[in-house]
Image (cartoon, rainbow, N blue to C red):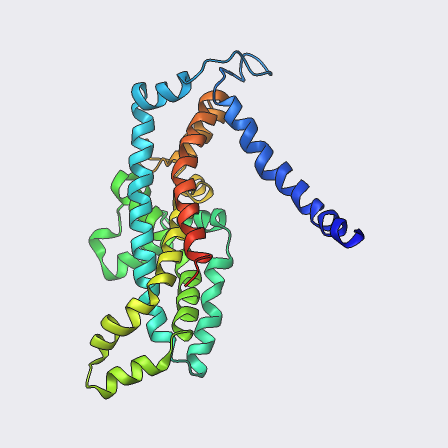
Amino acid sequence: MRDRHLKYLLVMPAVVVVFATAIWPLIHSLVLSFRMWRLSKSNVPGPFVGFENYEWALFEEPAFWNATWVTTLYTILTVALTVLIALGIALLLAPGGRLRLTVRTLLILPFAMSPALVGVSFRFMFNPEFGLFDAFFGILFPPLAEVAWLADPTLAFAVCVMADVWGWIPFITLVIIGGIAALPKETIEAAYVDGASAWQAFKDITLPQLMPVLAIVTILKSIFSIKTFDQIYMLTNGGPGTATQTLAHYAYFNGFKYYDMGFAASIAWIMVLPMIVLTYLYTRYVFRRD
């Protein structure tokens, strides 16, 4: 009897922490999304307005759809580039060796940096007056030396994608290297014995067996790309204009600049919907039974 109750007692602190830091804020923000609350006018939530905040976002607010488009394009590009480049690097580093072991150790350093620090670093490096990339392009590509990257909507978006890909490649590479190491070597060796080339062995043997790992990292990276905020905030703050304003930044912008907390909560909950789908897919792959 004591042992049966002890396990619940031991897990209770973790349950309380999760409820206080995750579940309760989600419930509170959901209720808030159905209320009108201008923080500049009142320090307490206003009356319930039903789905008015959601209707305003979906049918009356072009800025919401701009943020949705930016988030979608940002997610597609960062996920595709990160997974493809990481896969290529993993294939080069997977065989091992002393030098490759050192490189794999150094790979984790960019991922150890906080996204806010990555954003600040890239903002300085693309500074048109004293930035590292400005000096680099001035030597190799003189026509690009005077380009104000963060002042152009397309180039600023490209810099945001570049910074995110640079920060996530190390982690995804290490995960894929682990997946490659877990593959049975007999199948690849048998393909070579049968006369398959390196490309055929990769395409027909390695890649199909690696698909579950690639699916997991793709879903995981998609989740983080959709909710990206701090890196965008520190790098471009959504600018120039709204060219790099993601949904997370748009929710923050409405909540803490215009103080429309109810509308900001509704934007946040619209973001939750794709997160639920991706989380479901992630758990299906991680906890799947062969």
